[in-house]
Image (cartoon, rainbow, N blue to C red; front, side, top):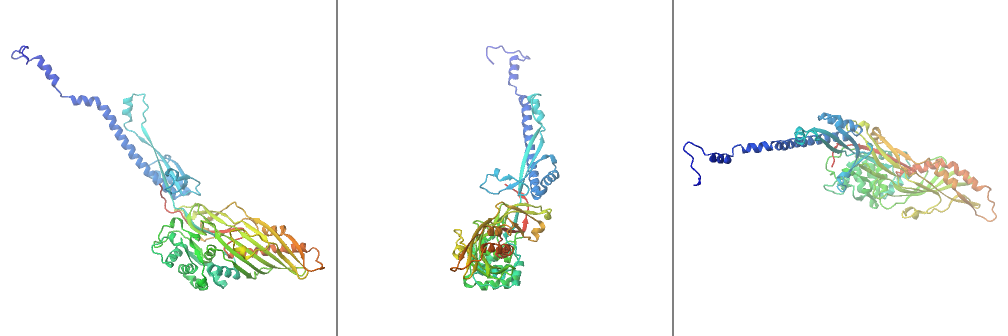
Length: 572
């Protein structure tokens, strides 16, 4: 104690000492601090609790949205109803499913994630985007209103929005070619002989067996892989090579043992001059290309008849082969037919058969056909000839839509957009060199239509084109797919268009063969009159020859043998 302050008397308490004690007393300090910060702490706790609830609600809503998207993608025809039902089953209201959008999802890492889904019609869609919106209560929002004042606009719910995209592997197996409707022994044997590089003589029964035998394309790829000694190959690798026709025929025998004897006849005929088959131009396996052939086959039916495969092999056999034709057509009005045919390759980057997704296109090959048709018509004692040269361009079919549901397989419908090849026709002559040179179009020269020995000849030339570049949608129902029904898409009626146009455009010239010989009057008029009735039988002839080659005059035949919607899965 300072010396200058008086000492307190015994029994008395110094006021200075009391004040100093009070000043030094720290009891109750924490309570005072807590009291001053309690509201702030309560607000922080409210934020944490409400934030946790919102986070949990967001995760739950995202899960429900994903499930709704999977349900919608599994039933594209009833996507909205499927999404609503799934939301309700997970404890949400139908009204909380705010958007169900069908579209096309492209699983390409080169595309930004936000652009991989593009809305489309349900016919072309392979995915569904579902949006759900939920209002999550904020239990501590009233604390904020107390803190901020009664006039503050503080929401008592948080709006949560989630999106989910689910896609399905929507693929079909389809092809383009010709419906096998008739048999012409001379033509089909010549065609198969050119395909395998040997002489072929099949009977009608053999031909019918080839036409009726269906070969599974996955089994064929497996057999091809075994034939060339591939180990651990995928379906894409099996058909990504060029093999000999003998190997191709051996693989067909393994895949279709029921017609092995007929295929062995073709293999024996091939001999040392066998041609090759570019399998990469024959079939495309699309999403199944990365699957190993040693694994169980994909659950999608992909078949083609043995004859269709041989026709397709002729289209992808490399350089054009000249096929010489000489046969009796067996058609009233036609006496005999000689000619030539070559088949070029399909368009680059395409195949004849495919097991793939929406957007895939298959092509036919180009074909050149020259027929010198000896008609039964006689004009002034001479037999009429009709030399025809035809160029048939690429026909194509694009897979543009698939409506199906794993819950209702019978509702399946596949849509192909089909464009037959343009037809350019001439009355005129071409050479064998012209037929095999696909780098330029031939220029047919005037041809002899009628010869009256020692009197005169009539020559003529004409040109006409027929075709339509606008695709025609062809819808294949469930029954069509199950039965591999062939649908034919035509551009025009060729009896009333191409042949009549050629005859109508025909420019004729009479060539006198002898000096002082009297030429029958009206000879060109008589030739025109004799050619007009030939339109129908010649049309039948051309159709028969081209169908045997797997093509059609101004028409394209397509068929679908399998459709697969697959199981829906989340995309992204």
